[in-house]
Image 1 (cartoon, rainbow, N blue to C red):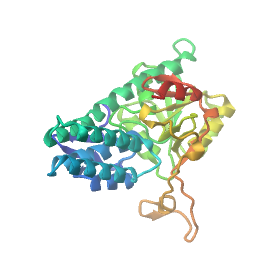
Image 2: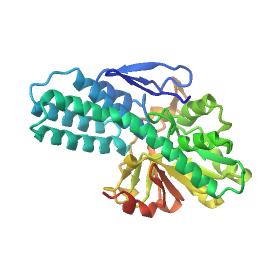
Image 3: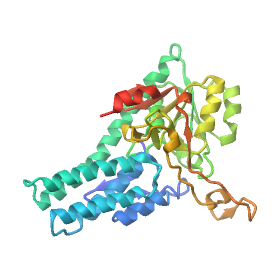
Image 4: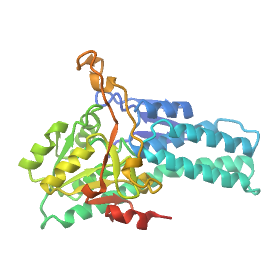
Length: 352
């Protein structure tokens, strides 16, 4: 059974505090939008799909417990709160897309004379709750499509060795995972020989979270430093690299956790296929290319300290971008719930 990072039942929301993992598994309650913004911004919850789900569920909890005088007041409150939630971590596009869709939905509800205030509120909350179920179903589909694609190039019943970066599993989604969902599917098919996960400095999502999930699921795996990827590809027969995405541009350029770009360059040099696993909600066709993606920069302390212990010389300035952009030319395929596509096929497949 995979880990559950989001607990939602009877209008009560709790999230697994990922800042405490792996030392401590503690759930904290999210009572409304302000709590939702804080747990996303502080990275107590992270991963693009999970950010959108927790943000929207925090809104559902808040409006369920709040009295509104009119449909107009409800609509205005929802629109303002959603725009506020988008500001919590702007690089991850899922929250932005969810906000746009929900704002369009509430505007439609507000114009519908057949819906009274209570029905409008109830229907809106139900729409948010369905996001949980859909995310898990989409992740399983991503796992199936990704596993099938990777195995196409593997002879016979040979086992595969894969590299993954950052955390893309149950802790980054509603459940199962994207890139880690592909790995889970390969493991269920008994086709995984070994998984190598990077530590993912400076926030160590790989060492703290992905390693935690791999051990939990008893998937054969090894943790490596970010700087070991080239040596690993030279000395081990790696079948594929599988990573997630915080935003995919229309041309296939992909923003993901810092360090992804260099892994893609190394994979290209060694002839290892590099795959991005992401739901359709991570594909932003309004962004022409990766050059247009705004990259979040994080505090110096994430680099200079581990916990309360300072590891860097005092006085040294830091540059700490949370993400980098991998050019489409380095990506063998983008694995979605609808199938696996080449970067230049995204507009045709996903334009509405």
